[in-house]
Length: 304
Image (cartoon, rainbow, N blue to C red):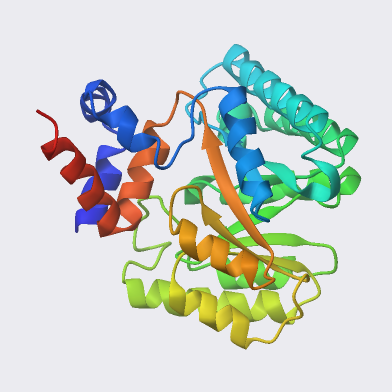
């Protein structure tokens, strides 16, 4: 119930104003978002790579309503990739980028989003790294997978994301588990109707394991995005050779476990968001784990 309330609040303009203007909010947000600028993104990437953790960076912003906003997002990614490349952080895909198609024009025009995503993929390739297409709510799934197919014609390393809470995802995993296919499996963080998504945590977890088995048993490159110890254990038990898959976690969540996995020799990649448009991302992080809500409320209560 709490999760549904928070996800509903993530769409509330009034709640957004309250959170963004609360004096403590930015301090709390920095647990999950290292900053607003390219400098902040590069700094965080350097620190993670120094600890043998890989990086995927997301320039925050998903409510793009016109072509100018979409182009600004493209420009931000080009600037980021240039800075990462100049700093020597992109070789062999050590630091890559994650892109939400809604941020580059998907809600305006699918063709525009494809063209913009292609521009980002071209820049990523020139710097020796890759792009992963983030997945959003279920209404965008078919469009995102269609764009993925088009991009993979020229950029076969483009990553996909699937969400285990969607009822369709096991079938999508079977379609995507082919050689060279990079697929991030996460649980999902949007408010979805029961007609398309599992509502009970046990069902979401069971779906995650089924999808994990499909991806780990296929010829592709699974990216196991989870903070759940049970899912991490399940992935390890499947016996895939290290280096043929990776774990992924969000910036600021379970950093000790992230480092532990990296120290064990697992490939560990951290999802690092940056930018001013943090509200929707931040609220979804609160919705995912009660501990995140407790952390936020304690921070609010501690202010004089």
